[in-house]
Amino acid sequence: MKRNYWRGKEKQGWSNRKHGYHPHRYRRPSHNNRTERLEQGEPQTPVNEGSSSSGDPSSSSLTQNSVVPELPGFYYDSEKNRYFRLLPGHNNYNPLTKESIQYKAMECKRLRLLEEEEKQKKKTTRAGLNSSMLLQKRQLGLLSSTSYCRLVHELKVNCMQRRKIEIHSPDSSVAGTNNFKIIVADVACERIFTVNDVEHGGCKYGIINLSGLGKETLTVEMYDNLYFTNRKVNSVCWASLTHPDSHVLLCLMGIAETPGCASLLPASLFSSTNPGDRPGMLCSFKISTAWSCAWCLNPQADNCFSTGLTRRVLVTNVVTGHRQTFGTGSDVLAQQFATQTPMLYNGCRSGEIFSIDVRQRNRKGQSWKAIRLFHDSAVTSIRLLEAEHYLMAGDMAGKIKLWDLRTAKCVKQYKGHHNEYAILPLHVNEEEGLLTAVGQDCYTRIWSLQDAHLLRTIPSPHPSSKDAIPSVVFSSRLGGSRGVPGLLMAVKQDLYHFSYN
Image (tube, rainbow, N blue to C red; front, side):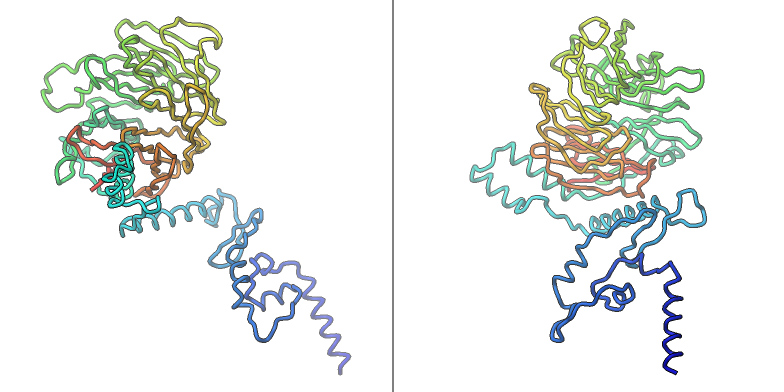
């Protein structure tokens, strides 16, 4: 009898060893589950009767802080404490893919941050920073007026609350039907030029009047363009031809046999007042595909604008039509003119940043490049600071650097920005001491210009996607000199105002 019993046990053990698949092998080992240890065949260690492994703080901290190993082709679910197999993204029968898992995690994080904002759980990013402390230091003379104003802006940025703005339009069927793609404010922040994607393809233009932001209702008026284009808009900037911000410069992409062009549209074209008046100077210049554009405000290069093309820069005089061409070794994705000197700064796909003196004639080679800086990835945005001794640049690796143009060295780096392949702008508000940028993950981040400290991260009101990256405008005078401070965010078909109040 005993002999048959042991033979049965041997057969049972041999049959268990024949099966190669064990579900518990793909589970994360638990330090508090003794049964799972025995199933995995781990060696047992003697435990004192008076102490329990579950009550050991070192073992619990080890469980929480231990790193989950990554297994190729598998995904670890922390809630279920096990691994799941990943399938290719094109498989329609099982939605468990790497992309869907990442999207689910990002969406959970976004909803959690939105819930915290609605509950007004605002915390200052600097320890001990509050309004009473600032006022006390200011009265004691421990803070200069500049430092006091900068720190007050930091406090107000952390207390901004989101409000949806109602958009009014003379044509009621137009308002809220198209998705915002780009919004660009003029110098006075009284008007915002908008580029909207339409359903049947192409883009539509409009101008938002911000005078309504000073009222309690927080409404804005939007005037749409009478014309329509089926071509993609690559870049937009305001132009001062007859008076400050009198026109808008657009770079349109070519389509089929139609070449690209740079169009100069008068801002009066979008106004509903005096419809019988002539719109002003309206012109278009044929160019190849332009990635960027910039308008020159320096008197030594009056009435000139620049376009960044594929491996060359084109500077055009609007009045005379004269053109200057500068060959580059890479596509020019970002541009800005200096105001104190006739210099044009360019950011390239190769990661190079260089300046051009537009007074010189065309030259072959690269001898005309004055200042040369280098990033490890494609430069998507550049912004000159007011004194024009410093330049802010952002690239496709998510790095934002502040360069000293006098020494050609990076003096600060602003961390937290996310970008992989998109052309995303930077917004520098030197008076308030703030830097604002929207990442490819659809989060709006605000840093302190002085010490590169991340002040606030604002989630998008809409689910994150490639076609729903918000476009923002920040100013302490939204709507003009008597306007209200805050942040304007355009995403999808909605416009939001983050007010200081």
